Amino acid sequence: MRTSYFDQDKADPDDMQLGMAIMQGYVPKGCLLGGPIVMAEVADGRNPCWGCEGPRERCGGKPKRGAST
Image (cartoon, rainbow, N blue to C red; front, side):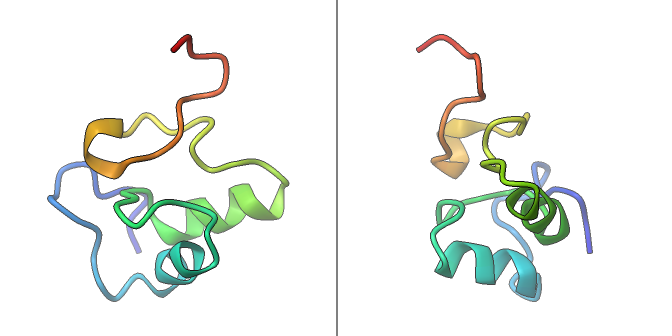
């Protein structure tokens, strides 16, 4: 699995961990982080969006932690 899909229009459909995270509401439907990264962040009690460098305009994710809005 990849660590991210930032260079693609959407994540690979066979990334089962990402699919599960989306279904469970941990990340938005358009998330471009790789499933293993998302699940590691969730397991550590962090929102995966907090440290993500991905394009929010494409993924629909929450702002980075500490980012001003």
